[in-house]
Length: 130
Image 1 (cartoon, rainbow, N blue to C red):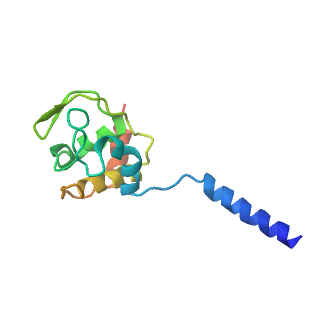
Image 2 (spheres, rainbow, N blue to C red):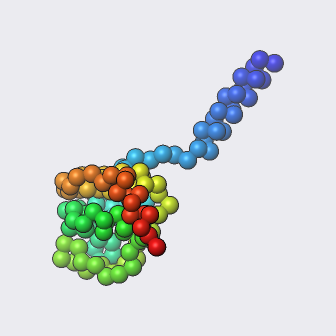
Image 3 (cartoon, rainbow, N blue to C red):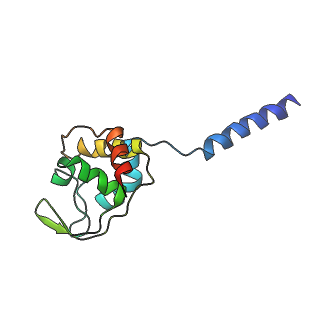
């Protein structure tokens, strides 16, 4: 009987952990949601997806960058002298912390040396959305 109870408890714990959404850090969020388009090294895909490496979009206006993640992008943009016109889907399903973490990861990698994005900044912009 004790064996059955122990097996039940182990299986119950495993199932609970397996069904819990995985909490991802900035690199994990990048790997799951950004890497397919922006590549492992942040160089993007020429004529399709803009680079994140040493990009004025990444290192420039923080609010603009946060809004791209929350609202997506459906307009022509110029990044590092090249024009891009591909739609980026909104990632508003990410938590404020995940958005801050992934943007901080991007802003401190791929040749970028910008400061961190704070969760509070993301939260404030998300609230302003109409």
